[in-house]
Length: 152
Image (cartoon, rainbow, N blue to C red; front, side, top):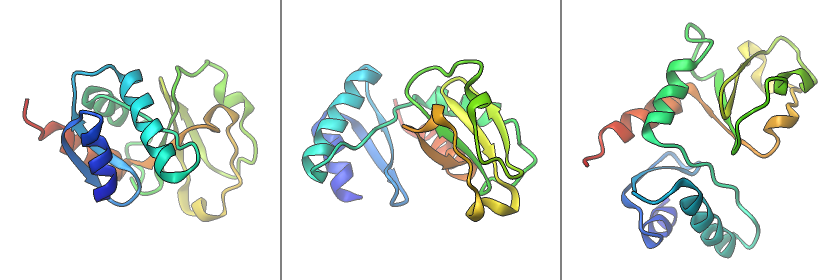
């Protein structure tokens, strides 16, 4: 994750911190979301040799994702937020296939999924989330905590 941290610093992000080895980064910046996204995607593509999608959310947006979790009583390691770039249409969940007991909830730029005991066996497909990335609610909570701890 030191390489990712260095890339973030090279595009001007401040107080960069990473969390677990899955591309989670918390930082400070006054730069617009789209500019950060573009800069990081360019750096990552040059490094990886292929396109790598990036999702950017403010600390407030991440806190709101956590607060809006429609499955707050369920285990955080079995409940995920699937983050996407654009606001989701009201019918985004209508096109899901392969449901086998999963519960779904629609957010603003995220889809909530509670997998229950069958997460490893899931065949769930949600076309609206094809280009997204999922983080479980334990990770979302930790990222919110880390972002809240950054100094101004």
